[in-house]
Each structure stands twice: as C-alpha cells, then as structure tokens.
Amino acid sequence: MERAKTIRTNVAELSFDERGFIRLKLLNTDSVFDLAEAKNQFEAARILSNNQPYKVLVDTRQAFVTPDKEAENFITQAQFRKAEAIIITSLHYRIIAKFYVKRLKHIHVKVFRNEGEAIDWLLSLSI
Image (tube, rainbow, N blue to C red; front, side, top):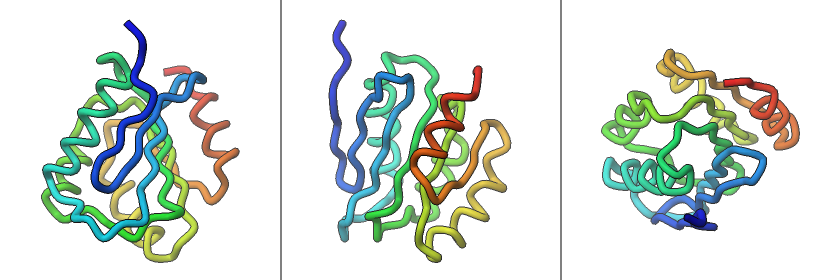
C-alpha cells in the first residue's frame, strides 16, 4: 500500500519524510487547536506511518496557534510516538515547550532552533 503524501488538518500539515519520520508543520492560522484537532493530527500521523510507531519533527516556526488544555493533555499522553524533535524560534513557544517536555516522560523529546540539527538528532536515534 502506498503512503499518503501529505495530510492537512485545520492547524497543521503532516507528511512522511522518506528518511523515516513524520513532519508536522504547525500553520500560521487562527483556527482552534482543541482536542478534536489533536486527535486529527494523531490520526493523520497514524495513516502516514502505516500504523507503526514513529518519530516526529514538529516545526513551530510559522505557527501562532497553541493547543488548549484538553488538546495538550491528549498530546502528552499519546503513546504512538517514539521520539519528537521540536523546532522552536519564538519565545512564546520556548516557554510552552519547557512545560511540555517535562510532561513527556515516555518518549525521547528535544527542542531545537535549527531544522538540520533536529533531523540529525531524530536520525541518530536507533529506536
């Protein structure tokens, strides 16, 4: 079965990178990032990964939207990810990421300013 190329939700665009990870780019939108949106993103990632646990590169550089409390709780509890590299350049997302990373005890997660370093880290993990 051929993988879907790109799936777009209200606040994100997800695609499978042939190097073995999901790219999740948060969009510049005023849409609501609620529980339904979080579930849509995880369903898209599940489809893109062919139902296999996956690594994910989250790009927040163009984003203005943040998850609400219910969405954040869902995201931090979701079990299907193996690792998450987050690209952050804004102070707003850096503050949010500090708390987010502390809640993710069950997967490898790291914050980066540079996309290349984030990808290198994801690819270096043998999980």
